[in-house]
Length: 107
Length: 290
Image (tube, rainbow over all chains, first blue to last red):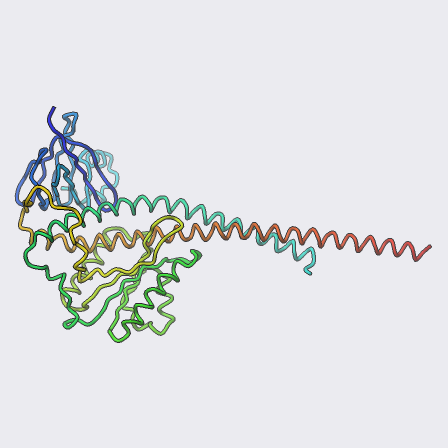
């Protein structure tokens, strides 16, 4: 089984996600980048856009971030962002016409 | 001694006070629970950001302008004071106001500008001799200040700082520790204190990759850092407020209970005295007839 590492998404309001994952693909300010276990220490800015997490069960989870930062250190990746939602959450909200304003920033 | 009727009235009024304080205690407890989870989440965010920044700062070659003291160019000190909107929360408001007042007195020779969050602090300063120091009052309910509000406020502050409108920015808030304990605290937000980023963790695994450069990231991160700190301070204060109110209301409810007990016993005594008196009157009246 592929090696995993710890991954967290944190906003000022709450901790959105924290789990061991196989890999993540993020939209950095300098271009898209993928992180796997044992990545070198890295700090980068993130653009507004998608962040894909490959979970341990080989399922992909998609988040939408409103910019932010990614730090990788000692096999721990942390995303700090001000706003973050999961893709399914937005789709559900848009389908049901609920809380449209609170997702207005989502591309 | 009060008459039985008067005592009865007092018992009734204290019972209703007790009901009110108990209700307030419940409200404070439920609000506290809600806001406590928010403060803990925001703490993790602030701490993470702090550790990211410590890595960045330790790898920077030149010092960032936000570390530099600029007492000469801009002698004005700006103070943000966070209080509650309402009273009935023990010494909470008074403690933090006194701390701020002490600081203002110490720095009396400098020009001070106050930004007030929370109605109680505003009322206190408009009445006193320091009313002229108030520069800004944020009338929104402290509880309703969301991250977006704080962002706007922090944006204004940072612009002002860069335009040299003030040289130092201090914040006075109440740090939440436990329900029984919270500490009135002051912190300097700008310029950032040099000691703030002494890296606590050992750097591991050699050099860090920065995308884009460390300078660019830091220029982007510092305003965010001020925002989160400000937000964190507001949440801490809010939590402390509810905790203080809850403790005060528990004490008030207890006191009301004690008072009711005392009054009830004096009511019983008064009633007994009245009965005895009446009996004596009847007996002595009967004796006189014989």
